[in-house]
Length: 279
Image 1 (cartoon, helix red, strand yellow):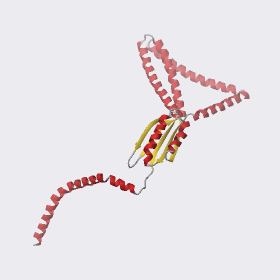
Image 2 (spheres, one colour):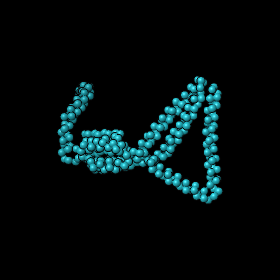
Image 3 (cartoon, helix red, strand yellow):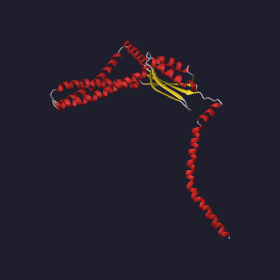
């Protein structure tokens, strides 16, 4: 097989695919015309279309991606223990595929915590109820995204690439000893395989988004308004503030001293000239 024959076969495959699509459309038109010839067939078509719509509605429920955001208010003394209890609960809940995606806890003047996880939808309410039991539920929101179009496009792309790969494998078997044709087929096959793996990965990610929910739990610390708290903070930071003030004073003297060496002699000179002129 030479390169011209190989190119001709590629063009033939593309023409056959286009003709197949046209033929499929004609078959649909002929089928519809046949259904219009008697009312009984029309009724069957209507029932089939209604059933198709119901199936689409059922499938749409499985194409929704949900993300929940929850804010729990806890005392400062319970922040670390509550954070650890929630983290341990998710780690132990393998039955509901609970996986921690991000965790962060900060202590100090502005204490806070955050746990972002992925879990099965049926376990979301129990998890949020457990988190609310650690303190007080301050805020909750849910965001829903429909991935039906994205999933359909991905599946169509996978089917197209799979069919194209099959055709390339058939051409590769027919290439025989034609080195140029074999190289072209191998290069195209490698590109198709790479695109197919990428599409399969995207489909897996979309499936994970529709079969599990993301829950982000924020821990906010209750403001302590005790009388002695700011006093204790001031005493604790006294030495640090003192050293900071001394360092700033030394820096100010370092900036002022060169000007004093210029200003003071200048004042004495002006005073001397003023007295001499008064005489």
